[in-house]
Image (tube, rainbow, N blue to C red; front, top):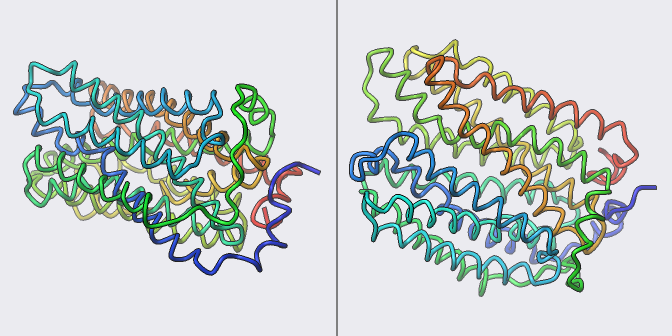
Length: 415
C-alpha cells in the first residue's frame, strides 16, 4: 500500500472544521493580493522600454529574473526542509515583506540601473518562493475532503492576482503607479495572513530541521508522477502568460487594427484561468484528479497548436481562442499541488510542494526565453505551437499515475 495521507480522506471528511470556508476566503484573497508582485514590472514592459530605453531582450530579462529568483528561493527552501520546519503562515508573511521591499525599490531606478532592476526582480522572485507554496500548505491544513476545489480556488486567486498589474496598467496608471499599487496590495495580503486566519486543524506539527527530507520526497512515486505532470503544465503556462500581449499586438498589427485594447484583453485572458482552476477543482474532487488534469492539458495543448490559425484574424477571433486557452492552461495547476499533498507523507507536504514548484519554474526559464527567439526567427504566428509539447507529455504522466497503486490516495480513492 503506498504511503501518504489519502487514506485519511474518508475518515476525516466528516470532521471538517466549520471555519474552513472563512479561512478559504481569507487565504485565497491574501494569495491574490500578494501575487500582484509577480508581473508588476512585466505588465509595464512597453513603458519601461520607452522610459528606460530597454531592448525587448532586457524587458524579457526582468520577467526571467523573477522566475530565476523563484527557482533559487524555492530550491533553497526545499533542500533545507524549511517549509516543514517552520510555520507556513509566518513564512508567507515574512516572504511577502521582502517582496514588497524589493518591488517598491524599482521606482527609485532609471534606465542606467538595469543591473539593479534585474537584481531587485530576482529578490522579488525569491521572496515569492516563500509565498506561493506556503499559501498552498496553509490551505491544505484547513481541508481534507474538498481539497482539490479549495486549492483550485487558491490557484484561481493566484491567477487573477498575477493578471492584476495588466488591469492596473490598462486603467491608465503610469509604471510607477502599477509597481507601487502592487506593493500596496501585497502589504494588505501580509496583514490578512498574519491577523485574519489561524493555522488549520490538519496542519502538521513542524518537523526538526533535516537536509535528508528532500531525498524521502523524491523517492515517493506519487510525488514524482504528479511532478512530471506539473512540469508539462509549466512548460506551457508562464510562456503563454508572458507573451500573450506581444502575440495579440503583433496579430492586431498584421490585421490592421490598433493595440490599445491589448492590456485589458491580456488581463481577461489570464484572469479567466481563475474560473478554470475553481471549476476543475470541483470536478477533480468528484471525478478524479488524473482525469481533470488530462482533459485540461489536452485542451490547452490544442489551443497552443491552433494559434497560427488565428494570427492576423479579427481581434475578436484571436481573443476568443486565447480566452479558451487561458481558461484551460491553468485549470489543472492546483490539482498537481493537491496530488502532492495527498501522496506525500505527513510532515513532508511543504517540502514536496516547494520542490515541485521549484522544478516547474526552472523549466519556465526555457520557454519564456525560447518563445521570443522563435518569434524573431519564424514570426509570432509560429511562436506558440512548441508549447503543446509540455501538455502532451503531461497527459502521459497522468495516464501512468492513474494506472499506479498511488491512484488510491487521490481524491479519496477516485484517482
